[in-house]
Each structure stands twice: as structure tokens, then as C-alpha cells.
Length: 638
Image (cartoon, rainbow, N blue to C red; front, side):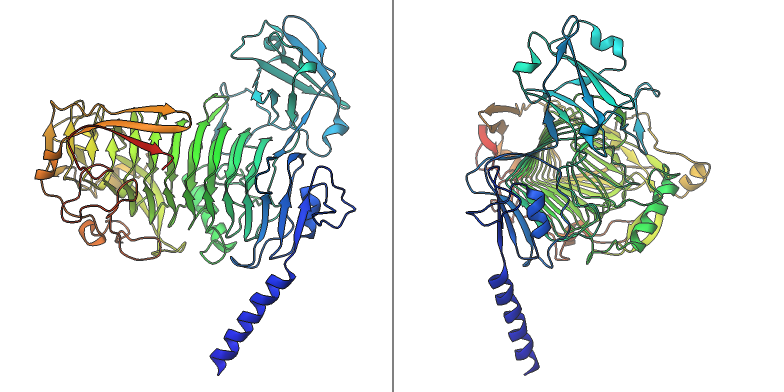
């Protein structure tokens, strides 16, 4: 009887929420004194956000909206969200910039505009300097502002000094420079062979585009927008992480089917809240441990933080990271995104740049993404545990994947890795299964930092541990072109190679000698290293075909990516086992098994395309091999 009453109450609550859910419409032809119906729309998204309650939907119609939205509330649950979406079939742009006219020609290709400081309100990107832990301007005294100038939606680069912007312009590298006095902001910019008053010239005005101004704004959906031009600051793991779009230490967002581009630092931020410790004596391993402890006190757990879905977005032209997240990324799924042109302009330096840069990637899934033309594709730094990086296409990155001071378990499977450097490894506890490696694997043999591992499927810290290299498995991979695993010939913890195929141009990890590289070494490092004995890698069931050219190449037709590769069906004569939780065993330091994020057992029984594998004898590589010879696959979109 009690169960029946409870079910009836739940049903009543659901029916009531549906009955009372509202739609608010926004149009560039609307007015904020309207009631927000389709016939009487509002004119700004912010006005609709102020009205929307859990269960409501904000529908935005075609046009350009220049505003910064700080949603004051979120939904109550996954089934009672606040949804913001572009009207079906309509193009909706939200910009953090404003169009600027009244440019005056100075000399060469340089033009100048003077803007009253009141134009910017409380935030002026041209007096706001990029700063934060692990930010490294080059040279050290160089100043970078969060502002930017765009000519026909292509951004110009900030000059170091006024003299540079007065010189004749390089068409591929046009510059801007700004100074702010007590009343005006003066911007000088190079416009090669164009009159900026006859073109579209925009400048950053707003710090973010969609970002709550307080934490715990949960269960928001953001869908179908073009969002660009944000004056975001550097987002280190020890401070508040703002993006052009950001969740601000919340739970359960869905960010999908958007184009997010031209953010000075970060596209999407799934990260940390701000407090008095931001960038305050926290730039060290010990400092970040303190940050983690404070985050645990401030609600970092599975029921409160993370669990976001970021899918089917295009994220580009960000100078720090496409997606960043310190701890707030935990339990999230990053799926189906195209991420490109990240830290390509090299405007500044630091230690937080990547297509995806996560700290605390606990039970995170990074899958089915296309990541290219980045400084580093995926960087999982500290506390990657239960993470799965699978079925991704990654190419033409300066480096593909970096695993830093993690203890695992981490599963990297069914990926196409075709950058010249595939991996930088400064972690233990990983399994690399059914990947194509077309580049070098760089190895850091030991790092003395004491970094956390956690209770299974939890943010609760079990202990801190140093970082010996090894405790890795490479199973059923295909090494092609420059695939080079030689730096794992010796390591402090066991490294096992099983069922791999080595073709022309690849280098095995057996019998080679390399100079050892080390990470951060403190005064205790030598003593700590005495706990380990260097050991040779083990290799089993290898197929070595140094005379076989796999001839791997990628080509693009329109927005589709095609891969050409040569296979030999005879590779299947070497029997291989299906990769499962039981086969992989437990990682050494946390003593945990490889599991799915829901705690179920792992079974790599599908390939890159999601097709069923031959479980009795799965093929090496991300693909099931059905015939020999040269073959072409459409590898993106799937």
C-alpha cells in the first residue's frame, strides 16, 4: 500500500510538472516587456533565463544575440531540467563581442578607434590581463589581455608593444594593440588592404557567454547554438575555471549540438568554483592537494558535482583548451565532438593546453570524438581513475594523449592515433587495447609527486602515492608508420605487450635502450625510487612484419574523413583473447579492476564502428579484419 501511494505521488509530481512547464520564446524582434509566448516573444535570452523555472524550455529564434547569460537557477533533476535551445531549423548566434565602427586610418595598414570606457561597463577586456597558476607568458614580462579583435570572424593577434602594430601588416599575421586610460580605450589594429568601416570588425566585450555566476546551478540543457567571442581568463586546476560556456561546479548539464569557438582561453569549462585560494600559493603538487581537500569539503562527490554530457559539438579556436575541467568533470561523458585548432596560434604558453584537459577524470568517458590540429589532444592530469578513452579519431596533433601522475585504472581502446607523437606517459595503471599507433610513445620513467587515488567509483581519496612508470598493458594493437614503443623496454613496474602487430616503420619495446626521462623530482625522490626494481618489458604473441607497409593515410572529402589502410588476414593466424575485466586483472597501486563507469565488467567486444568483434579471436587494431589488401573506411563522421 505504501509503495502504491509513493508511486502515485511520483506520477502526480511528473504530471504536474508537465502541465505547468512553460515555453519562453526569444526573438531579435521581441521585447522584454512581453510575456515570452511565441506570438509575444522576449528580446534577450537573459530575460527568459530570469523567468524560466525547472521543467521550462527557452526557445531562441534566428538572429544574433550579443549578451552574457548567467542563468539564476537550474533544474531539479534529469527529468525536470531547464532547457535552452535554438528553434528547430533556425540559426542562432550568441556573441560576446560588439561591432566597432569609426576606425580612422593612421599609417601603413594601421587603423585606430577610441571607445569610451563606459561602453564596457564593469568589465574591460583591454585592461584585464590573462593570469593564473601555470600560466607562462613568453617572455616572462609579456602582457596578454583577454580582449581580442576579429576581422570578418578571423581573430588578429595581440602585439607586444605599440611599435609593432604601426609597422606594415603581414596578411597572415595581422596585429592589434590597446591601451586604457581613465576615460577611453584606444585600439590600434592592422587591416591589410581593407577598410574596417566597410567590413565586420568585432571586439571582445564579455568575459563569458553562458556561465552561472554561482555554483550548484544544476540540470541545464544547452542545445543548438553558435556561441563565440569570449574574453575568458586562464583556467588552471587550482582556481575558478571559466569558459565561453561553463557549468561552474554544478551537476547534470547537457551541452549538445553547438558550435563553440573563438574563446581567448577556454571553450567549455566543467570545472572548479572560485574561492580565496584561487592562484594563491597553490602552484605546486602540495598546493593542488590542498585544493582537492577543499573541493571535497565544498561538495565534490558523485551526487552533487559532474555527471555532465558534452556531445556532438564543434569546439575550435581556443588558445588554452577546448574543454577543461578540474574535478567538476568527474562522471561525465564527452562524446561525438569535433575539437580542432586549440592553442595553434601559440599566443602564450603554460601547462594547461589541450583539446581536452581534465584533472579528476573519475569515471569519465571520452569517446567517438574527432580531435585534430591541437597542441595536445587529450591530457588527463591527476586522478584519472575509471576513465575510458575509446573510439576516437585523433590526428595531426602535436601529441595525441598525455596521462600525467595518474594511478588508474585507465582504459584506452579502439582509437585511431595518427599524430607523430601518440602518447606521453607519466602514469601507471593503464591498458591500451585495439588501437592503431602511428607515432611515438614518450615515457617519463618516474615522478616523485605524491598524487591521490580514490575509492572505486568515488571522489573519496584513499591515499597519496608517488608515480613509478609501468603497470601497463598493450594488447591487440596495430603499430604502423612511426609507431614506436621502444621507451618501454624497461620500467619500474611491469609492462606487458600481448597480441600486437608490428608493421613497417614501427619499433618494438624489446631490446632497445633509451635515455631515461624523469618528471618532478623532490628531495625524497632517490629514496622513494629504492622501492622499485627496473625490469624488462614482456612480449607475447607478437606478429612482426617489418616488410609489410600498412600504408595508413587520412584524406578529407567535404566534412568527411576517410582512412586508407592495408591489412593482412594472415595476422589472424595468431590467436588472441577477448579483452575483459578478468583478462586485464587489477592495477597495482589502487589495487582496482578495470570496470565500466557503472561498475559492470569491461568487455571489448565491439570495434571502432560499434560492430561486433569475433569474440573467439578478435582482430588486432580498432577494426575487425575481414579481408587482406588495401581498404578505405569512412572514419568520420561515423
